[in-house]
Length: 253
Image (cartoon, rainbow, N blue to C red):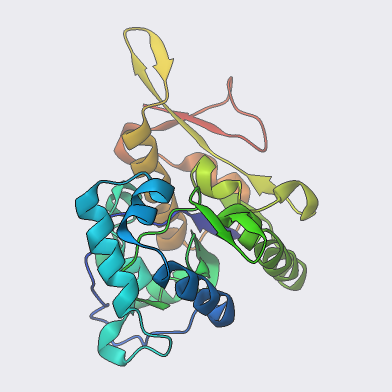
């Protein structure tokens, strides 16, 4: 199965210590188009379009101005180790063995507003460009519009070639970038809930970490059968047969 997760806003440029080489992203031409556009934006443009603070706008303005079309080796670090948000707290890539990392490279994808789609070992430069960002160039009004066709064609070809399905562990913001309904394969989107005072609630930060933990669980156990996902029990989660469907298994802690 192909596992899909979201990127993170928090970055700590890092590479693996296992001697596994950095790879190239899938959409270098589309990336350069977006970067050229981003370089034309002022700090105020970034504040308006990305809804960020002046200090973050200045940081990302500087990042885009320094962005290299053909980056040198010391300008990039591997995606799975560089993203440090809540999902990646759950993934714990720093604990991967070499076999884990190679399995992840073949089976895990990270949706990105700037890069489109990343493999774990793809080299990235520091950036922030969330999928919900509004844009205005070449007729595109949003990053969803910009990536809609390339991501759909990429995923359609992947599932047809590998004859597998998708384990969707991405957030709703990033999941919307792919038209899953037209891909034509099995898609499973786990739901994580927390029981508190007799009520089941979806807690954002806990759900993000749980999605990362499930990605790690699949990678470390080399899971290829969807039925095995239901055995997930990290951090006190358990499968709810009552609330689950085949496409939306529910896990409660």
